[in-house]
Image (cartoon, rainbow, N blue to C red; front, side, top):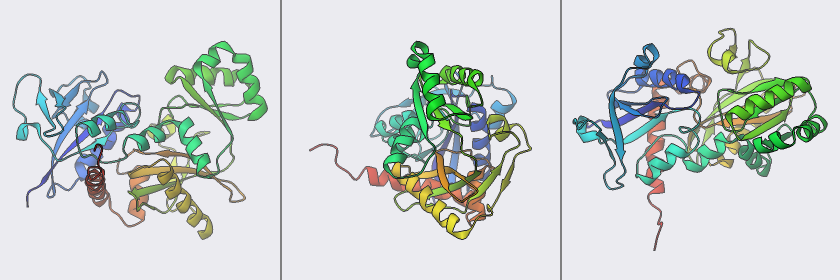
Length: 361
């Protein structure tokens, strides 16, 4: 049987570059080599595309280079070419790209748009699902439309912050109160997120978030357990059993996720069966609300009285073997290697479906 050629794409220009290297390294080790012929392609922090570089090489030395390549944007024959004129394996052709990219320019619909224009099959969500999943402001608007319960929030533009700081502070204090969470609208892995307990912390948090995005989301604090579920599929998506985050810090920030090993994951989360069923239904509803495809992790808060609040959806969650997304599916009966295979097949399925439609007379 001829093996399908899969390109694992990783790295990127976002603040989650290193997280992507960890995810891609795990995928590369676990992907079924009998079924797939694998090539690696890394995007450096400065935006160059390096054919053949492996994620663990950049983890050891970020200055290493592969073969610099460009994508030939030819819908009838999409492929990569080497900028130095050298020949790539199979002339740079492939069957599908598996983008293990987190954050802006990888998880926000931009690179998905490039793949769509070039007629390339790829794993994960499309342009709309990726864009809505990345933009917390628009995500929350869609969740509201879908009737999903969430914490009260306000969205502030950086320009408004610069012109009317006092009004912004007044609105937040009177609408949301303290403590509250301040987040850049378009970043992941808790980068740029702060918990503000007073006005001084709020001002600092707003300035920090504004460094990362023109749009800032401020949320009322919800006292509850942090529960996450994994979703897998396209139109027929299903949810895993839930897991619980027990953060080592005040909240599950970047350091607690990737540096401090004191945080714990409890799988399955100890919850009443009725709550589990409601969480699974809401996770799939959130997945469909943003039109996600392939995979997503959906995060919730569950209060002492078993009230459920959705926090966010992540359309390309951390994907190491010890990350919550694959661990939840492993506990639900899908091993890590099989999960990768299913995501590749879902990518092909979505590609066939999208190419079956007419876009002109």
